[in-house]
Each structure stands twice: as C-alpha cells, then as structure tokens.
Amino acid sequence: MRCTLGVDIGTSSSKGVLVDATGSIVATATRAHDVDRPHTGWVEMDARIWWDEFVSLTRELIEAVADVEIAGVGVSGMGPCILLADESDEPVRPAILYGVDTRSTAQIDRITRELGVEEITRVGGSTLTSQAGGPKIAWVADEEPDAWARARRLYMPASWLAGRLTGAYVLDHQSASQVSPLYDIDAARWHDAWWARYAGPIAQPRLLWAGDVAGEVTTEAAAATGIPAGTPVITGTIDAWTEAVSVGAHEVGDLMLMYGTTMFMVFTNGTESLRTPSMWTTSGAFAGTRNLAGGLSTSGAHRMDDRAHRSRLSRAPRRSRGLWAGRPRGAHAAVLRGGAHADPRP
Image (cartoon, rainbow, N blue to C red; front, side, top):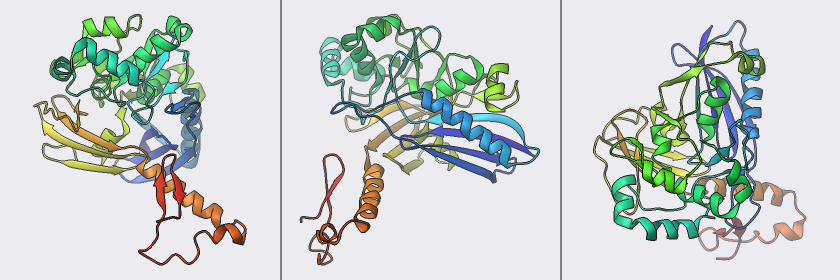
C-alpha cells in the first residue's frame, strides 16, 4: 500500500499518521511529552526528544501496515521555536518555545529602541512580542555566551526533522517570517543587515516553501527510521499553518481556528501584507500568500490541566473533594489563575 507519512511535533505530544492515496487515514500513533519550565517565563524543550519520538512513531506506523510503501514524508511542528545548533548539528542548548516563553522582554525593548517600531513593522510586518524569534536569538547571545560561541545553525521542529532526515539546512518562509525582525516579509528573504547585527555567526538557512522538497532520506536516516533511503521529504512548516492546509482553509478569505495547547487563528489575505498592532503579519504556507495570525497561549493546556486536576480530585480524600461540593451551577465556578491552577471560589 502506497502511503504518505506525516509527523507533527506539538507542545504536549508528537503525532504520526499514514495516509493512503485517497486521503484516508490508515494508521496513527502518538507520544506524549512535557516541556521544561526551569524558570518563571521560560518554556523550552530538548530537541533530541523530537528526533527520538519521530523515530519511534515512524517505526510503529510502518510495522502497523503490512507491505506499506512510503511515497513521501511530511513534517510540521510547534513554533516559532528557536533551536540553535553547532556546525555538527548538535544543539547548543534546549529549544526556546514560541510565545509562551517570555524570557526575551529586555531584548524586545532593546531591539525596538534600536530599530524603531515603524521600521520593524515595515520590514517584518509586526511589532516585536514574545512570539518573535529574533529577540530570543539575541537573548542567547546576551545571556549564554558559551552556547552562543558554538551556535552556527537555526532550526525549528519541522526543519530539524527535515535536516535529520535529509542533511538539508533549510527553513520555510512561513517559519522564517516569525523570526522577526530578521525576515523581510515583502521581499520574502532574510534581512541581511539585521541578521548580521542580531544573529551574527549563525548561517542563514536556505529558504523554501512548506511544500517544497527539502531532500531525500539518507542511508543513515533510513537505518534509524525504517523509511527507505531516497524517499522525498518536504520542508514543512509550523503546525497551525499545516492545520489550515489540511482542512482546506488556505485560500484568500479563509479563516482557520485551531484548538490545541494554544488556540490559534490564521486568516489568509492574498499577496498583500496587512499590518495591524493586534495581530501577527506572516508569510503563508504557499508562495505569494500572506496571513494575519493570532493565538491564545495555553488555552488548550488549561483545559488539559483542568481535566487532569478533576481526575486527581476524584481520587482524592473526601475532605479535598468537599472543596467542590455543594457549588450550585452558575453561582460558583473554577477560576483559572496564573499557572493554570483551578480555584473553586467565585
């Protein structure tokens, strides 16, 4: 059976799927994982987990379907994440996650002062927020000189997988447009002067579109994953944009809402780069497209934490369960506070 293999690296889990030529799902597999929060405002993850879970998922899926033939591999992942690696592609530190990680406030302020809000918005499309990748690269340069001295390459989850599979050093335009302010959104290329200023020794990844073939599975990757050598691998992109494509919401005027660990909205507005202070202006998944996007960080994670909390509470002593007892509908509710804790008070 001829199938396409897809793997997504999410915030809470990695998912794999085999899809046949008609678009029907043949097999699925999942690996749950946790992110690390070593300090307040930090959210990061060991990128080696991404590859380990990819290998595990791929082998499980291939073994689940007799006589499967892998026609191609698609990859996606949470983002924008900042994974810096050395010249041998060894990570120099854990990957810094997207907008849920807020460590780069000082760098956002500094870069905004140095370049100016108007110029940043003109080039990159958006003002700098915790979603922007550029200030997080600058944070590593400022705060972790040993890691910075070894940093030579920039990856995100999808490009990391594509690189491990093919040896290609690439990044898709959509992901690159969120390494603001280092990407010129209207020119669809890296901003060389600002890259040199804030990303210094890191080589610029070759820019491709999400559906472009990054390369073919190498002999080494084939031995690890079970995917035949020579199988084409697309460049891939950030998960929310992949979701929009998967449900057909990538034409001009389409709006996609994704309810994951983070609730995400992606609006496709054609070739024009619309700019508004309340949204992120990004490249689309396909050549010549632009998007407006926004997200509610941890909205889905709150729900998962709430389910886990209630499950634990159901097994707790009666005195603990009494905190929730006798609360009439509409009068009292669980209030989500910082850290996604549930409070039974009104």
